[in-house]
Image 1 (cartoon, one colour):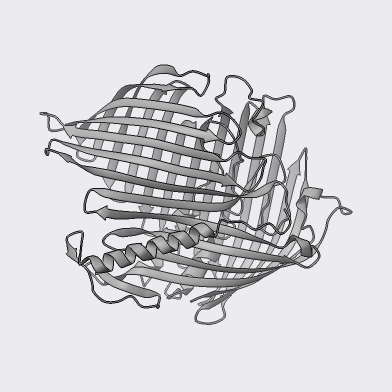
Image 2 (cartoon, rainbow, N blue to C red):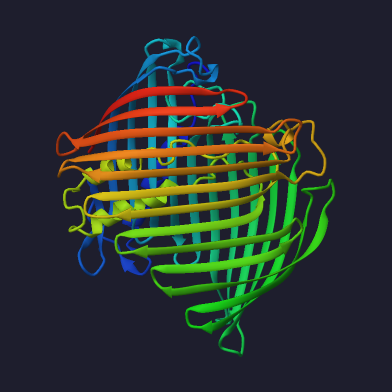
Length: 543
């Protein structure tokens, strides 16, 4: 673990090159998506390339915001894996330098975002433990050929717990052998169009790779083909869809799995904003056996969109494992938003990113400050990036999840709630998951939490209150709790980690923000309990 250097930064560099190439191709193509491209050359300022109009004002097609932060942490227990007793605690002072960049693209051909941070940590008492941690969250869609060929690219790098029952880190500065860096990258080209005006088609190929910086977890490579054909009938309100899915998953430790699914779906619009659906099909896979096993499937559901701010959908289906479902609800009020999802399905990738993605909340608040100049007028220009990051700090300090090396049956429930007022902002994230192995018998090559527990339940809750003290200063209070329970093994396991954090942030300049946080973490566990107290100060500069 000491002085380990990751190769993950190579991917952000490659993606930046891809984005630059796409921008260059667009600016030299002359015509993009039926619209004449702006011939103005790109500059090195934050606002570059051309601009597009939303009918009320100009918005940048490209937005580039570099940033850098310097953080000092004083902790009374840097090595949380050693336990909570006073004689085992090790205090330390950690210096972190974290350059980062956020790129947002809203052009005729390319839309997406790229957010990357390289966090370099230096330890005063554990000088041989200096390390670089990467954080990446990116997604983009490129329209390669007008209205026909598209390419999706996504990636994520984060720190993840190897086991749900080992020490759970509430900070990236903690020395913890149960934490590792994981990365998932995905490239997905697809085509879509019409067949004689009677039906629409889409054919997509997904290729993803998941890597963990530890030998205790399996690497996962996934190859998937999906296809869809949909059309209308002589009955105006009745539509039909045929879906196909072929997927192969290879684990570096564990066996390869294959799954095929073909279903037909009929949809009837009862009202313009309400439709019901029925499905029937057949699937085959080798999750629970060495050979492919086939099963019939059938299901029903509905979609309701009463307004453009409100969406509600539900689909329940009889599958080979029992009943699967997909339920989602979202609504945006003028100064608040709520979203909830509940799914039960097979997962072939490790659930290292099983939390509500803070990117959703970040984008919501970030865009709100940009689009409504009367809402929080004290947040201007680059300050909004630092303000939103500090406001959401700690909401996903650690991910609920663990590294698995097999196909699992998972139920995930996720709730995100944000309430905003003149001076106060309340943000709530809640997560719940249940994981079960789909293997019929134990595989001696697989060693993860599901090797010793037939059922793993996890729950997470984060609540953050942000209060504006003045035009330049904000107070944040955070309470976060994570619980993991393992049952069905020789010994039931349980780990509960609670985080309390109080923070103060203020503007130090037009582009500079200062933050001071006090943190207390308490972990109750029958394997590795600990407690930690820390004071953190940071200076953040957004160009």
